[in-house]
Picture 1 (cartoon, rainbow, N blue to C red):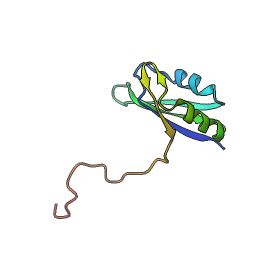
Picture 2: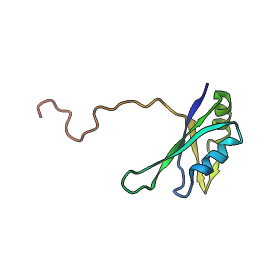
Picture 3: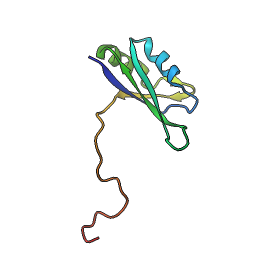
Length: 97
């Protein structure tokens, strides 16, 4: 069973290849994706790794959390399922408006 891993506090200089190389020392990496701003195409400072084996991913999380990549201390943990946030607008929650 695969595992999806969140990687935060990435340097803007870090690449998807850097992430893949870092995590591949712990097992097979299915994908590495750095999230970029849709308007500037610049890294948003976080990304996701998907690893084939859950146990390998858990070992990678334990070993790489707080480790250094490109001068930044990484925040690494299991990704939480994406939730739909229906309350994304500005505005008041006051029902009178």
